[in-house]
Amino acid sequence: MSTIAEAQSTPAPWSKPRATAVLVLADGTVLEGQGFGATGETEAELCFNTALTGYQEILTDPSYAGQIVTFTFPHIGNIGANGEDIEDLTPARRAGAVGAVFKAPITDPSNYRAAEHLDAWLKARGIIALAGIDTRALTAHIREHGVPNAVIAHSPSGDFDLDALKARAAGWGGLVGLDLAKEVTSGQTSSWSETPWVWDEGHGEAGETDMHIVAIDYGVKRNILRLMAGLGAKVTVLPATATAEEVLAHAPDGIFLSNGPGDPAATGAYAVPVIRELAESGIPLFGICLGHQMLALALGARTVKMHQGHHGANHPVKDHTTGKVEIVSMNHGFAVDGASLPDGVTETHVSLFDGSNCGLSVDGKPVFSVQHHPEASPGPQDSHYLFQRFANLVRERQGKPALAER
Image 1 (cartoon, rainbow, N blue to C red):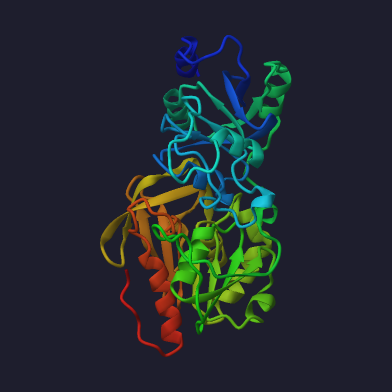
Image 2: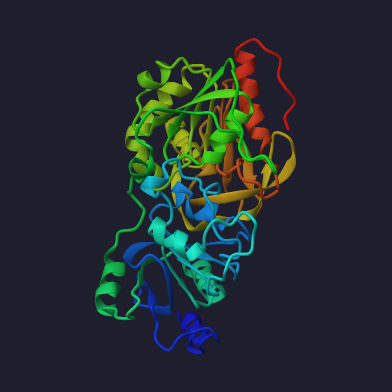
């Protein structure tokens, strides 16, 4: 931790004489900064994200539940915040990251879509943030030592019980074994018809369709549902605890397993038997992120906790089915062990950063999944074809001709 301590020893020019926020790592390291957003304290896993844009989408992604996000890009907040760029399905529950770490203080917004200052938005969301941290040094530490457990605290008075915070950080058990899907799922059956955002038009509404997709919400992102609606699908969203009978009772043409937070093995305790039955139904099935991991478990593979995880919008992934490389958005701390995929299951995508598994398909069945987030736009739309691939499996089952992947 000497590198972080040394990096923090020289105050940044914006630093105040008295810190109003601290980040306490499980090894006892204390990093001081200026507080923003909500006040209070919370424990979580500390990760970093390398994306240059999309901080509002990142902080509202339910897959970040139980995590504090360190942003490697130094200027966060320049475009403010608005009501359109959130990803969690039920904003009132505030599913997503619990903390954020910035290098520079939040500046006033300068964007025509800004509806409020990021600081005010963070307060309303209950997200604790601090600035003035050498995020390069902190990121280097995470890369070398792995994601630490930590406590982030914000108090305008600058009064902190550091011994208590250190004990809290050291005593937190981490994400392994935690089922967080139950905490972020919408918890009810609902319909979705909003289509993707269009310049100068905003979001649209899907029309009549003969394609019905049932999405199981383990922490689903809005833009996933938008892209499905944009393909002309009627979308029904079911809670994470939905049974196979409840899913099939909706007579779906396709089934979607969503992204989400936490340990896939923990959520899989109730979800894997359901997924196994759905995968045997003959109905096209598509999974993303946590849905990918739990599908792998249902098929007999293993998942593992990653050293630092993948969090960013610049990850190269190769699709073995086409030979193409796409730039994708990633957000996961667990991964499928590609070597554990059983006979009859093919690895379709692989990370070109570390060779980790990023996709699978079941031989001879309309069942596939990917680890990355094809609904995001880092490439900018390199992976959108996966939604068309899913729709084509549905069309094939309906006896209709396939449409070109786009």
